[in-house]
Image (cartoon, rainbow, N blue to C red; front, side, top):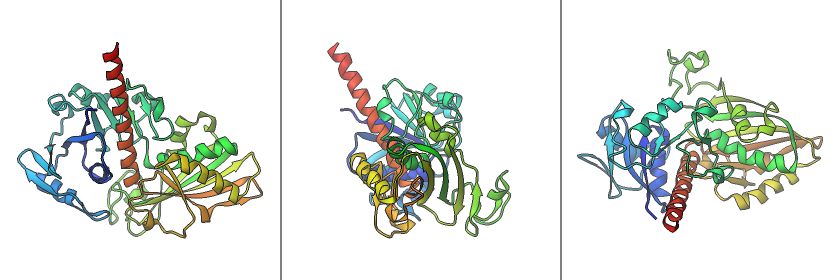
Length: 349
């Protein structure tokens, strides 16, 4: 099987986390070929070696004329701001992981394809469903891919966290309505101190001094996967002064009578089959204990509550950087499998 050739556009939090996950999470049929980031190579190399959240990179990173040498593998580094001029055709790029946060429309994604890439995956939700051929939450709908899709999104880290949990509960307990409150670590669209930083006035305030409510489209995103829940869910979000690991406080009314032990048992049974997508813990843990946890969401069993047999409350932890990066790579591996199947079928025919 030929490795899938990957390029990363935008080398911020997710871009750098993808590199670490690719080189540190075991063998994958994926090859990092290029990074496009308009920063100095010296800075790119330094931020690859050292990270305030994840510590030192376990693999050697050296600067070379054309880019970086990571664990002995050459990765070309481009500093191109005009996407149409990127050398994706020359480098035979199979998938561009669009992690700049700048692009979210089909028109912008197609510039990467016109530059020679075969596919693009947004590391965030697209502007609309029409802007992508599919939005994928790995473990939920990745098997629906045919291999013909060219522009994809892996949704948001929060969607990846909560959708597997909702999938279990909607099948077994029949969700009638719900509220989702995301408790999210600070992000780079917030200033360290008060600043003219955003049109959202709350995002002009210091990320390290306050708990800050922000807008979220989580409920709409969930509706893309479960149309039966459209209009039944609402969502809110707050940012808190931590640098990584977040949680979703999920409150649902369900048709089936239940209790906390039953809810936890349903999640535990599903987690056994879900692998890296869903987890559950009975330990009394804090957010920092989930740093570098690759699972999309981990239900805190000790926080599960049920009132009057029908009002269910769960707390679901997730490493919003590490888990999401691993899911993007999982989708890439699935695409590689599809491509290999298509190539085999063409040979046999």
